[in-house]
Length: 437
Image (cartoon, rainbow, N blue to C red; front, side, top):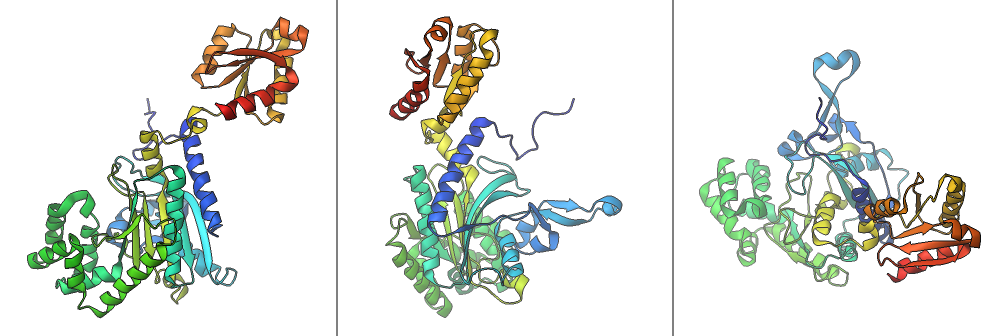
């Protein structure tokens, strides 16, 4: 028999999973829109040449390629690929619709992406990204606004212990040059440095040496990455490095007047491995997660690959799955999300009252409730047990006595209390009780 498990690195989403996901997306969307970002969606797959060469050598290996179809299938060649991130498709869109978009285009995009990565805790091959990007301005106000937006998202969700690391790609280039790392090895070195928090000093040292960086250069880089003053001494002789450090200071000063004021700090070892970053880079971390909740940076040259001229751009991406993993482990979801998707269940006393049960359900739905109907005439004990298994907070009963009196009995499944009331008052009673519980 075929396996019932989904492919490795993917998941089936059951109702509780979807409720948690939709809750987090709802918070993210509201915050992003308050900051002036507009919605955008792009296809799940792109022409393969759109994606290749945009993420560095390691990124290219993680792209899910789609083989040619029909008569060309036998060639084993790929002409399409699943979306690796939301940033490169955005760059394509900006180039395609340049005359239809405003001078300063701010968009948010919440869609799944796919990477042929090794699955791990909080790391999947299919996952959602929640991106904001600002196109058309070099101003550090852009970075400050994005830092504020993602900070507000996380604090709204209940996070209090996150930090946002801030660095600059030009600073890292200055460090590598000051440490005498050959320019041809800069890309490889940044990939290794990006793994510092995962594999530690010894792991990064081994990786850089394995990539051909001289031992003296490795020692100089690691010493700088572990101490801000050493880092700044190393880059202070580099003219572009000094300018980049001044840019970091401007972003920090602007962020001090935003919701990100207490969370953001300069961290020299932050590298971010994607090759398209050109300026400031940012990443969110929480203490009990190996990896980040999100990150981003400035990528002023990416749109130029499609347009023929550079367009200033900066973006930040939140990792929805990792946020949900941490929130679930910490019990951060409100009871209304964790409890279930139904406010009340209507019981069926016997087959003769099925029509009345459906009519009552209709009244309650028009009253603003999410209502389920137990589909069969069954013992009330079994119906209560079913409601309890679904975390339904209220159950309605219309037995012979209630029918004769034109009333409905409502049982609060949380307290066990049961009250009888006129049918016209049931919806309001359940709504009122739900708010005060």
